[in-house]
Length: 201
Image (cartoon, rainbow, N blue to C red; front, side, top):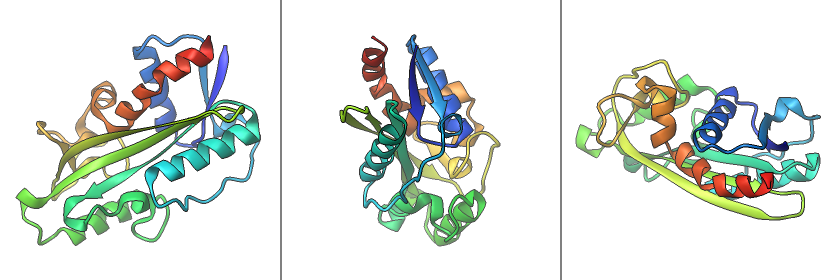
C-alpha cells in the first residue's frame, strides 16, 4: 500500500479525494492528511497563482515527510471583480478561513451588479510532488453564477452562493457525489489519477 499525503487539514478535501479514488477504482493508495504525519513548518501561501501555491505546498510536504504529496490551491474568480478574490479567496475578508465573512464581503461587493453579470468560476490547481523531485501540476475550472442569498448546507467556502452553469441548485445544495463529478477540485484531482496509479505500481 502506497501512502500519499494530502497536504491539508481540511477533512472535507480528504474525503473528496478518497471518494474520487474509489470512484476511479484506484487501489493500492492510502491517502492521509497532515494530522497523520509529524508536524513540519508550512510556508505561507505567497504565490501569485493557484499553481505556484499548490506546487510550493506539495514540494514542502514531500520534502518534509518523504511521502508523495498532493496539495491544492483553490478559490473563486468573480468576473465583475476582475477575477478576484482569486488566490486571496480564503482570506478575502482579512481573516484567513472565515468562510462566512468572505462570502458576505463578496455579496456586498456585488450588490449593484445585475444578475446577468454575476458570472464566476471556481478554480483549482492541484500538484503532486514526489520525494525524488518529480512534480505534476493540473488545473480545473467550474463556471457558474453567483446568487444573492446563500442556499444549502453541503460544501464550504463560497459553495452556498455558486450555481453551476446549467444547474438550478447551488454547489452547497448538491450531494457530495454530484459535486465530485462536476467541481473544479474533482476535475483537477481526476487528472492526477493516472499518476497515482503509477505510484501504486
